[in-house]
Image 1: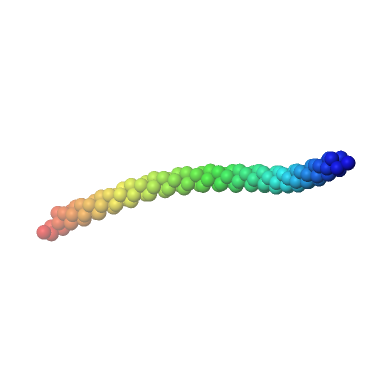
Image 2: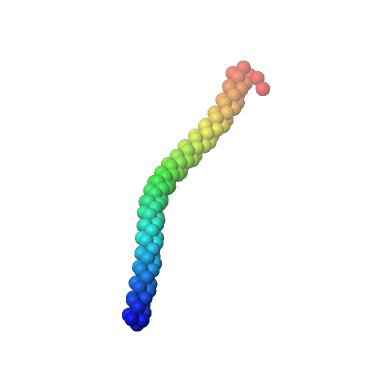
Length: 124
């Protein structure tokens, strides 16, 4: 009787230990599920953040291209202004030269007129 009782106690203790192991295992499985859910949520958030970053990078790229176009247009406009300024300078130089020639011709005409007066009127 005593050994049957001891065997029964061993069986009861073994069942209790198995139940404890099952509870611990169940708790660990639940913790694992919880950690997996958190990790999955984190991956979803990371994925959303990556999509947002790609969108921002695309916007920055588009803005950079627009700035590049703007800089090229400004460079072209500045070159055109430079060419126009050079043309204007040439025109100013030509006008100044023409003015100088007119002054010289005026002086020659004045001398010629004075000489004609001297010859016609006999003035010295």
